[in-house]
Length: 125
Image (cartoon, rainbow, N blue to C red; front, top):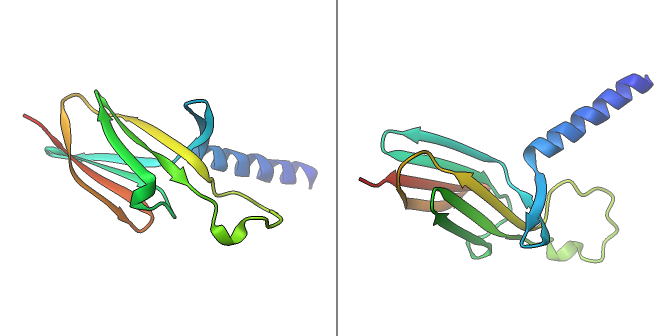
């Protein structure tokens, strides 16, 4: 029974690391949201999981061959001062640097949809 409990705990820790890797942004603690990236012809689609993040809390920029998504996900106002029993959803500063395939791209579309940032990049000729 003890071995089974340890296996479950290790699986949970691996899953959490897979989805929300902690890092640093300019010396401050941060987290990295999970990303999906796929290409269709001349377009590159990027989906970044950012539930609860608004457009105002978000910055997107192309820096050379990397697209950078950064911002902050604040704690819900109603929970300040509350006793925390479990905190699995990351809050605070986040940054994700995504290396783009070869070529030059421009942001064609940017929207928040169903808790995800959806970016469509067009390959420049």
